[in-house]
Length: 563
Image (cartoon, rainbow, N blue to C red):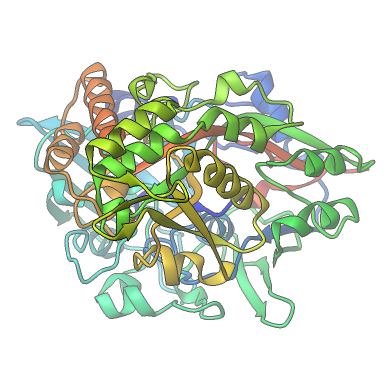
């Protein structure tokens, strides 16, 4: 299992070089001690404390935006922020990340992770901890590593992302705990492929991978391995409850219980204010922010974010199948005005979060604004439509060959941010002669029933980036990818994806990735609006958790301060 870009309703620094990770026998334990690189800001953003300073017991109350469609995070229906947040407790990443996004193995899971370059190929040796146990009682072994890597190019497996799997040449079993993985060439993002594993029982067949945990109450602790396990899902209350895992071999979890309750975005602030919710991550509205800072025992922790708001366009149907229409919609959209409206009243400098890139956030190395020639210009939008043969009708809305230029905007009902964006875009593009109709749908079925099957024309949601900004390009923009929701296939982008995956020089990879971004602007598969800064409201006494940015945390170290 690798890190995928994750989707979120919502209303990187580059990774350390191969040589640095090859010597990673040392352990990095985020959340068990001070900031990994001495960063005072990072320590405050997470309230990093020693375990000895924290009490045992207590409940951490978190929220979900919707019920879980598939508990398998690597499956396209499970690849959401909600699923990942639960997995951080029941099946964590096998790597730890520092404040700069640099990875080291989590020794609870991996005792060896070393890479060398042999004959122009990256070769990785990985060994699992002999104490590591799956929920079914079986110890981890090297077959788990192999099964997790050899099915990545099998299209019967509905992967959220298959990026990188096609670069694997061979997986060799060295012994019961150790495997050796040879890539076809140099593969700079190799550590991403070893950031998590699932048991071979889950990975063995497409049917098991796709269906074994499909459904809101169809979790299975046999397939998990972490400090916590799923105790129950209460359908009537829509609450997932986690408790400490009796098979866990690492440090004992400090918390007695963790709960995840499905809440509408509009209900989160009230729940936090009355203390029935402990965490609101990525605060996105001024009224929510005010309610959070008004709670007497709470604070808002801040960090750079990895989430970014955007519009996605389905280029396979309706007027948006015409590239000129997609380009016109982009030119008629005042992205800055939408960002200002979304973020009004929040402690955010709009000029620093406007986004002209899909892969790098403004604070990340490699960032450049590739949107300059696609900026807000209604007259340019009109010209594009004129040249494409869309003429203005009696009511100002354009027509072509008897077809009215009407675009349906599908959105999860009750998500205020999306409603705001849809209404603003609707008014903006009307000036160019484009009509947008609003189609609110049930939140629980939004991705599964509408976005993934392509039953939409236009929508808006949030992508959550990763510590590997150049690793999952094919996931969203590659031809035939399960999460290329635009449906648009661009052969030149596919070629770039392969080049980026196998180019060792960092600066050249940055250049190639920005070239891909320019192509996506031109084809308007989607277009970004702004980066979301991570504003996370928590009780002041909550430790080793908060606005983690690029860093990771260990669930067993989360707790409340004594006294």
